[in-house]
Length: 327
Ligand SMILES: C[S@@+](CC[C@H](N)C(=O)[O-])C[C@H]1O[C@@H](n2cnc3c(N)ncnc32)[C@H](O)[C@@H]1O
Image 1 (cartoon, protein in one colour):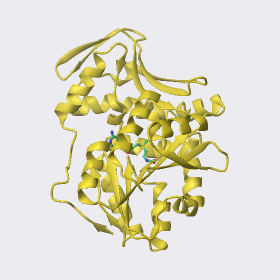
Image 2 (cartoon, rainbow, N blue to C red):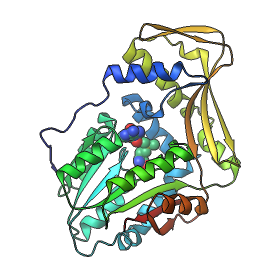
Image 3 (tube, helix red, strand yellow):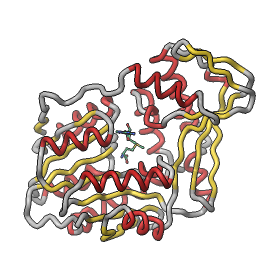
Image 4 (cartoon, rainbow, N blue to C red):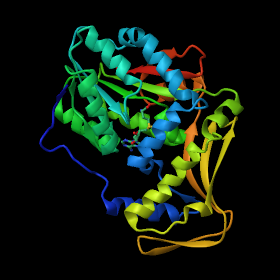
């Protein structure tokens, strides 16, 4: 693998002061809220990898089914026409699924670079190390930071056709309005001929969805509680982790599956030298995992200014990777 390091690539965009500001802002809201983008420190990355391996967390296997078995169909839909291009992956994580597309493209001698974008430097380093072993000839340009800042950076590095991947139903971690705005903002950063490939988790049996986020082993609970532990570690806070409990719900009508941490007693927590009061049963809104119908996906893509060209499903039709063109 050739790792290209542009001189001015940012190393760590999430300074302590940004983290502190975001956490305090969220904990002073009513209801209290924490941004799920902070889930992913070293411990959070490990826990998310465990979540992906859980039998209840069907999302990984569904999208793996698509990338393992349909990378040829995906490739046909990317309108590559022999030109060189960049694969830019937003929130790549460890690239569990996209690796299959990268391998297919490499084996078929396509001319491309891979630019994984992730806010977690830890997971990007792990990805780099693994790709070095698995795909030594691939040119990888890791970009550590926020989606849009790094997409801008990627455009500065290369003017080639962009294939932007946003997998794992990451888009579900925004509410519908935020997701629509996100798609419009992505569209504004792309040029004619570019492609946006987005993974959506589809509405299905509500119990199946709830079970994926409410596992009996408590790994999802640990993943949520780790954010309080991270705040303790990095912001000298004093959350007593045992005083909070994970609660999950799913609303079949809206398609929102939501995680909360509930305070088990009246308590005061000090964060960044400020005292935050919690009432018994007060909750922190941690994360939404929004589920969509195929119709909702089509409407959102077209309204955001894309042409929704193709939907590629797993064999159960529980998940879709939707391919959107910029014309
Ligand atoms: C749910 S994981 C999914 C990983 C991968 N896409 C997959 O499908 O397996 C989300 C990833 O997005 C990254 N992430 C979350 N918010 C981000 C942001 N605002 N900017 C950049 N990366 C972000 C996290 O660090 C994490 O690695």
